[in-house]
Image (cartoon, rainbow, N blue to C red; front, side, top):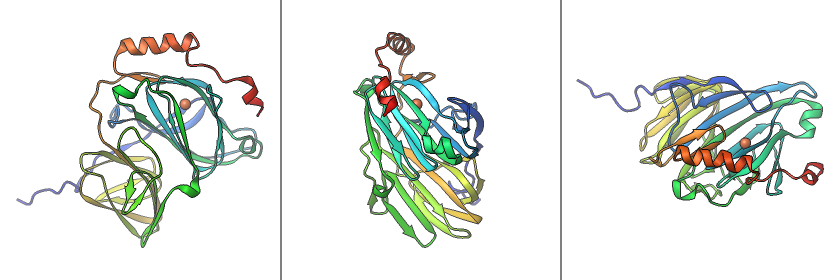
Length: 292
Ligand code: FE
């Protein structure tokens, strides 16, 4: 009997369409009933792609987070971010914002006034990365990574953007608490790109646009494919090409207690997070920043 290679049949799960924040449609790769998390990752949403009419774009007004990191990656449109520490930033196509909520932050993630006024295409992703128990109450911090500082590798089959970790000898600029590889592969129609999930990582792919094969497994837009580690995998695009996020990380293997925007290790810590937020200890977004 011929042994079945680990790449022969990969598990494929459809993302679930749902509404977030102020009512914008997302495709949620996880958590879903079939895939509660991919340790150390807690959530991945694909926002759009959607074509907004003028005045129609929606966002996520003031809300708190504690105990993990949010990684926002924008492909189309523009967003404005504000938080309770007085930070304000804009995301443009290709930019990444890596926010470590740590002990707690209140922030808003809204369409840029230009996007709101003119409408147009909006497309992006938000990934939640869990923090290890020892870092859950660390001071909040931000890393804004402009598109032109994200390393890109051109291959015969397309392009790989290195948001975290490395691809070949290209290394990302981001500083992480947990070892992560986050690649965005854009594979040309009919072409292929090779990649590998680092040994010991939990890895998955999210097909954002187009479709094709990952190893021998067919996948199309809004499909999540769970990946084996430490083995070369080919991304082979179909006639429309394929845009894929390739994400993996070293699992924390710690207890997870989650309640909405708070992710801790115990229910007591969750209860404390709710109390701290309600008492205003995660701060609020100051009015003067809103006028900026
Ligand atoms: Fe948020």
